[in-house]
Structures are given as structure tokens and as C-alpha cells.
Figure 1: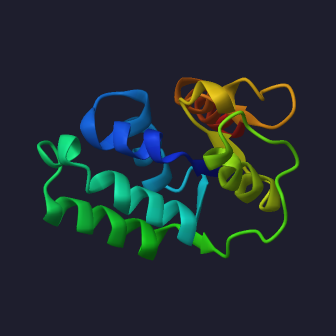
Figure 2: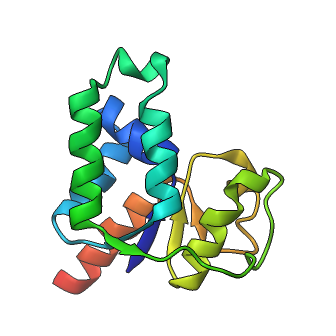
Length: 142
């Protein structure tokens, strides 16, 4: 199973180590799904981690470690050249839709603009994707 984690999910996982987003990052580390990233996603994450409001919680060194970890451990692919199969009300999110679609991956986000597209693309919030992973593991061990 493949997934693209929206930047908001990654940051949430860093800020709240007991939350669903953090559990997803741990599941990825255990090899329970393939994390897909791209240059655009990593650039957006780098910009977000540099925001002054986040700098209070995530040091510059920690931000660099996270970026290196994702760059070295995720499946980093080229950004899709074509348009997404559907468009978000927030055009800044369209690259995530295109990335997930190009790699036949689930898009995991807490962004309401993206979640509204749930009937058109495989987009879910972190709790639901985590539940899917748990059920999948239960099915394979049964």
C-alpha cells in the first residue's frame, strides 16, 4: 500500500507524538506502507518547518533531520508533469492530488479542501488510514 502524507500530517506527527499522524509515521518506519514524496512536497515541508510559529517546537536541527530522514527513507519520485485528475478548491493542493494519482497512492490529509474530494479520489484523514493499516495487518495475520 502506498500513501502520500500531506505536509500537515507530517508536522502533526512531529508535534503530537501520541496522535494518529505520529502513529502513521511509526507505521511507515515499520514498513507497513510505502511513503511517496516528491521535491514539491519536501520543499513545502521545508518552508513550513521554517515558520516562526513552528520553530518554537521544532528546532532548525530537528527540521533538517526530518527532511534528511524523509529524503533518504521515503520513495522520492519526480513531480507529475500533468494536471491532477480532479482539482481542489485550494490550487496549492493540486500537486498532492497529482502525486498520489500518478503513484496510485492514498492521499492522507487533514485538509478539508482535500477531504471533500473523498468521493472522487482516495483521500482519507490520518485516523482512517491508520485504521485501514491495522485492519490490513489483522487480515494478513489471520
